[in-house]
Amino acid sequence: MLPFIRKDLAELTAYTPHPGGASGEPAHSESAIDRLDTNECPYDLPEELKKKLAWSYQQLIETNRYPDGGHAALKEAIAQYVNESITIPPLGGITLPKTAITGDNISVGNGSDELIRSILIATCLGGTGSILVANPTFSMYGIIAQTLGIPVVSVQRKEENFEIDIEAAKRAILSVGAAPVGAGCANDQNQNPPVRAVFVVHPNSPTANALTSDEIEWLSSLPEQILVVIDEAYFEFSQNTLAGKLQQHPNWIILRTFSKAFRLASMRVGYAIAHPELAAALEKIRLPYNLPSFSQTAAELALAQRQLLLATIPETLSERAKLIAALTLHQNLQVWSSAANFVYLRVKAGDRNLAETEHKHIMQQLKDRGTLIRHTGGGLRITVGSPEENQRTVDRIAAILD
Ligand SMILES: *Cc1c(COP(=O)(O)O)cnc(C)c1O
Image 1 (cartoon, rainbow, N blue to C red):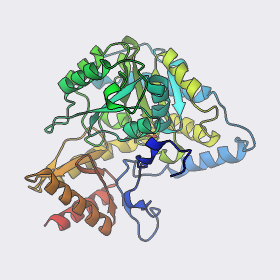
Image 2 (image 1 turned 90 degrees about the vertical axis):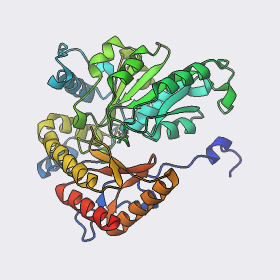
Image 3 (image 1 turned 30 degrees about the horizontal axis):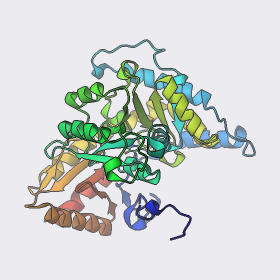
Image 4 (image 1 turned 120 degrees about the horizontal axis):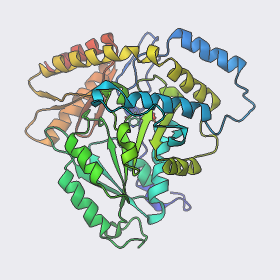
């Protein structure tokens, strides 16, 4: 270990997006691998949009110039899209004026990962705060927090439906908050600073459940000194957003991404929707030119063409139903319902270790047969892919289990 590197970093393991380092072959290669481990859309941008992007690159983007560091056009387009999402009928008739969210409510990041880091810097850095997460959940909150020396307080979710153990969360907030504030040392368990941010995913990854009304009520009851981060990475699949409640709750922030339904994972664009003062704080923290011109152009194009791009979602949802139905036929699998573009399951076994051994076995066997899935949170998470990919998933799992 190099002596100038922080000691606490030595204990950290880096996030491995594709376990085992297999980044997958291009989809058009002979030995195509079904990459169902990172919840992307199975389809690349349509040819005509790629042509438009290529044209923009050739004709409009000056590669010798810094990108637009203010993202004004993109923020306006995002605000308009968010306002549309607030008035979606299933939300129960909430109708806000179309001007409800403006560019001042938006901050754009190099993926929502950058926004997660900016939020952590803005709320918890230097021993000023801890974060609370409910496991299993998106691992990036804890990983980024640790790189910044920010303590992570974890509570569990209920086994049957993965609802957050709200009572445990309340207790954790009270007990951590009781520690001496500003005592400083972020690594001393007994002196953790108070919880300053609670991270939830709506719907959760890897377990695919949306927030329940009890959970939302609890989040609404949190005091104004605690920031509530609601990650809606899978909003386009769930069609269920809390954006309509932001104005009532200045201590809430919503994260979304272009990496999933919008098919732009390679471009690294995410955004936050928040109170203007909070959005302004995130703008201070981010790097000045955090978004390449090409990425900004791609995100603007994706929004302009959202009808076309989001048109594959009904297929994903019906494929999800088929996948869940087929997997549920296996008596020894427990498969949960899903509000996202992935499915979560566990092997039914007497004890956890046995189940985990089975999960490892299934994941490895699937990999050997050409399907990558994710083993996480004590279960298996499988992305809903194209109909062909899903059929192979079902067939391969049947071959492994039978
Ligand atoms: C995929 C995902 C994101 C997206 O991250 P980007 O950095 O925008 O690609 C964010 N949160 C969750 C829970 C996710 O699953």
